[in-house]
Image (tube, rainbow, N blue to C red; front, side, top):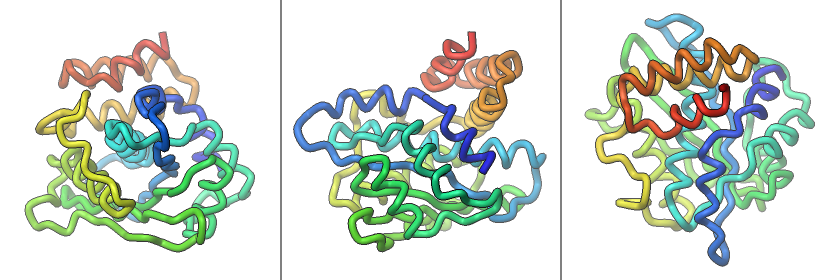
Length: 230
């Protein structure tokens, strides 16, 4: 339950950027938490942070597509809390569909990840909210896209696959797109910023957001994180 409460506090730029989707008929997608299914090789704190950072980054990638609107996270979090899931409960397709429906979404995306000493795997489930069925499971199966150093590119790739699963083209060169992605060190610091922000520690959150910016000055999400906690 606690991690879903934390999730609701993350009113990040991914949602704000979806204002571009005020065109007629945007597809609303709810991005739910991603679960660490058993990772090794880093501090547990990092993996807890990535449970927030991976879906936040996933949502940011989806929101670059002008035909997508990411469901409001506070509303999504309230729907998750209403399900009264335990701390280690897996969000199955039926639950994702209920949450997505409450959030006003047509599709819901959730999943899990595992980091085995640098070999990174993410499985994202795209759920059709209307019928509660898994439309597609997208994973980084490519042999050349399993290195933790490529975490941002992995998420970008999965976001493109998820868009394809719902009949949308990749964002491509849409406004805000970052060719080459965010360095993993910066993404990790950003995730830690989200973790500390969700815990109410604005000082530590600001430190990690600043570290993310030091590593990657063009990191707009980290810059917005700094602005939120000041």
